[in-house]
Length: 279
Ligand SMILES: Nc1nc2c(c(=O)[nH]1)N[C@@H](CN(C=O)c1ccc(C(=O)N[C@@H](CCC(=O)O)C(=O)O)cc1)CN2
Image 1 (cartoon, rainbow, N blue to C red):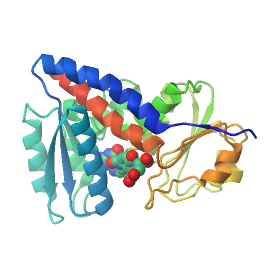
Image 2 (image 1 turned 90 degrees about the horizontal axis):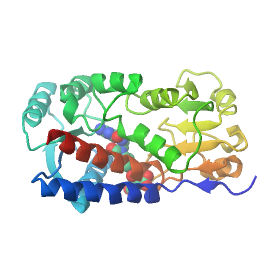
Image 3 (image 1 turned 180 degrees about the vertical axis):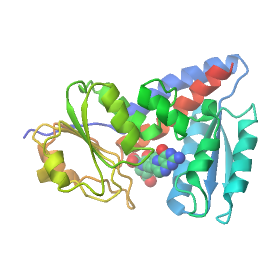
């Protein structure tokens, strides 16, 4: 197989941010500065890194970021009160609660406390349902990034067999719905699927969203398939065994530099759009 096309997330991300810079400047003319509130609960170092990356990306684009850090003992009740306060703060356009939260917190209740118009991370039950019907303003950011990469490289979705490995509420499930809404035939594999390789072998588009380093093996990949690796495992290792998958794929996202940077750009994009809608 010829060398695959490398789907360059840093390039896609830069193009998105270049457009956003113009939108931010236009908002400034109207006296509006987009503002994203980030909530980090506890001291998980990876989560702290991702929140910092989001804050830095906001700063570079002229988006305000309001950083809220809560101790790991925070209760659900306390977290809900913080979210309610942000919902009522008209200077805040988007709210991001970093996942995962400590185990004593009811994460679903916390996500669902976010007002739909500020759910720029696409985590509420209502946002999820709107996404399933195909009219969400803000689909969750990694699924949106995967679609943005496919579209940027004009890789066809309609009629293709997409196999999504993983069924998490902010990644596997919503990306499956988005691919279905774009007329792909979608198969979802998960932790109880027997012989995952039997399904991946038939895929034209593979979305790896398992959370297990190097889980998807090169020999599972059909020749010419498009591989999107949404894994962000420790040590910047994706869910796909890259070298093996790249030997068979026609196009593939690297880790790092693939889906990750576009995920952050999607969060910025949604925040700017929320600010535009607030005017
Ligand atoms: N509320 C949310 N929580 C989490 C989400 C999310 O979308 N919303 N996603 C993941 C982690 N994540 C963002 O939060 C994330 C992970 C990795 C990257 C990224 O750009 N990675 C870089 C490499 C990073 C590095 O250099 O250290 C890359 O792939 O190039 C972005 C976002 C879990 N939680």
